[in-house]
Structure formats: structure tokens, C-alpha cells
Length: 380
Image: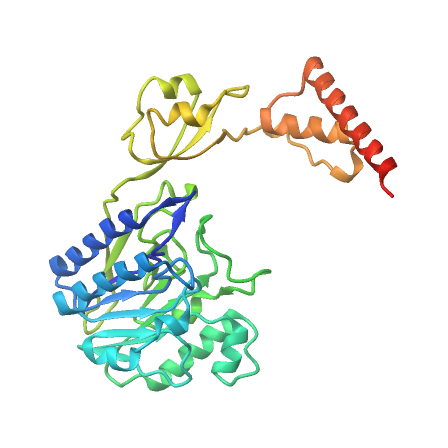
């Protein structure tokens, strides 16, 4: 059995108010081409097709066109589950008869799910649901954490698993120990959103979604395919790809990454303003986040740099790394405003304030406090 595993398309996403729809269409053209070139017997999408529950109409049209090319054009079954960004009901609309056409959609949680059988493999589609939704859908008041929910889903899948078939689980979850990025929504607080990688031990392969970096999830046969594109500055170093999975009749699954070539890359650049203005560092049309190394402010930096790099998404001072012997723990509640600001200045600039800067701060603070006192006197 040979199939492609992908996830986290986030169609309709914007990044710093820049629409990524053309970039996503460019990437999805490659997905269709990979399905043809690899002669894959199925395409698995492990959640987060859309970036939000009510996607823009352009994102819906892009998905409709892509699925039409895959299912009707390539004749390849497509298996999709809802992720935490998707609306389960919208995604699962018409799934009862679309499955007969080769499009298998698992939106809302099903208490008695049927696997999708392709060749000698049974694909168990386990859509995302938070514990409150799962308690109702599965009629089980004991489900309190995401671990409880996924364990229940897998147990129900095992009961429906046909003898003699390989077991592939498709899930959207945060597996403990995974490498995260800034663009992923936390599933909960306090660790209750994490699931133990041991849950997937009985599977022949676990096709996972949610984390955007392609990676193993605690075991070689449990993998995140990663997101379709880079969706935050923290993902600049990622190599986005689909995962080609070869599942023989017996023995472990074999995987191979198939990199996606983006329409525009997303990169981080670090340097002094004047050096960056001398000429493009790499393709000038890429999406860029810039870390400026200049000590002082730079007038109108964004507009001036956009003459060379038109797709800048953000500029910030480069983070300062202090030597270990200069790092100290400061109880902010024990500091007066002057000490607190001096501490903040030192952390950001990597040096203490000089006498002139300290005097300016004290004068501004005095004026602000005087204005607040005058306003308080005139209030009824």
C-alpha cells in the first residue's frame, strides 16, 4: 500500500494581513502532481483544511477545485478528518454519499466509526474533538482530557478493525514531546491537551496533524507530515513536505519526505539597517521577518526596506543574548518604576542606560504622573 500523508493546509490563512491563497494554490498544484507521479493509492489529510471554522469563499473554491482534480481527475481516494481549526459539521456535510465517489470526510465524532478499506489497509479516521464535545458524542461522561478522548477513539476503532488488514490511524492531536511553532493553537492549558505517543504503539502507521514541523511522534511509525506552508516566523527553518508512506503486507512502514517548493519562501533576516539596504540578501520577493541589529531607532525602516524587499511581514530589534554571568532573576514587584524601566532597557539593549537616557526617562515619567494627578483632581 502506497499513500501520501499531509495535513494543516490552513486554506484562507493570512499572515500579517498578507493573503496566502495564491501561495496555497501553488502548493496544492504540487500535491496533485505528487499524487500522479507517485501513483499513490490514497491521499490522507490529517486535519485543519481551513484556517478557521467559517472560511472565506475563495478558500472553499480552492479546496473544491483541488478535490475535484484529485478524486475525479486522478481517480484517487482522499481521506480527510476535521482538525481543531475546522468546523466538523461544515466539513462533514454530504459525507454519506461523497464516500461512494472516493471522498471520505470525517467531521463530527462518530461513536461507531467504519474504517475506510483500500487494498489491504483499513484507515481509521479519528477527527478532532475537545473533551466536552466528546463526552456528548460518545456518550461517555468519563472523558476529561484529550488523552481520554483519543484512547476511546482508538479502542472503538480496534473493535471495528477487520482481521487481516493493516491498521492506519488518522488523528489530529498534540503528542507529548513534539516540537511546536508559533502558528499552532494550543489545544488546552496545563498539559491536558497532550496525548501519550504510546497510544499509537498498536498501529501500523499513525498519520498525524496539528504540529507544523514534519517529525516523528515518539515512534518511527507515528508521524506529523507538517503544514502545507510556513505559517509563522518560527517556521522559517522548516522544510515543508508531504510524506510518502509505503506499507507492505508485513513489516514496518517506510516513509519518505517529498518537499514542496513554495511560490515565495518565508525567511528571517538579521543585520544592520544599512547593510540590508545595500542590496537583496537572497530572493527579494520572499516573505521576510527582519531582526535589526542597530543600537538606536531607524526612521521609517519598513517603508525604506520595502523598496528592496516588497514582502516584509515584520521588523523587530534583534533579541539580545546576555552572558550567563549577567543574567539575574528580578522580582518586578520589588522595583520602583525607574528601576523596572532600567531593567527592561538593559534586557532589550544589552547594556545599561547612560545618564542622558536616564534623565529623559525621569522627565517623561514626571510629566505623565503630574498629568494623571491633575486629571484625578478634576474628576467628580
